Image (cartoon, rainbow, N blue to C red; front, side, top):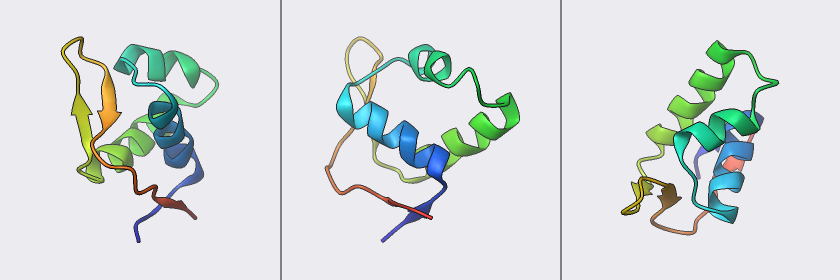
Length: 69
């Protein structure tokens, strides 16, 4: 089981709900300081489960959700 921060968990859940462009993910978290967002995005990418579709939207290649700490 992978443990991630609550912000990274929110990002994961948003992408699981609907594949999205990076810009859409950023726009949905405008209330988060940029360095904090980038750290969380790094956690999401470190899961090594993100894929991109033909339109460049991110989605997850499997369905095992990480656990927020």
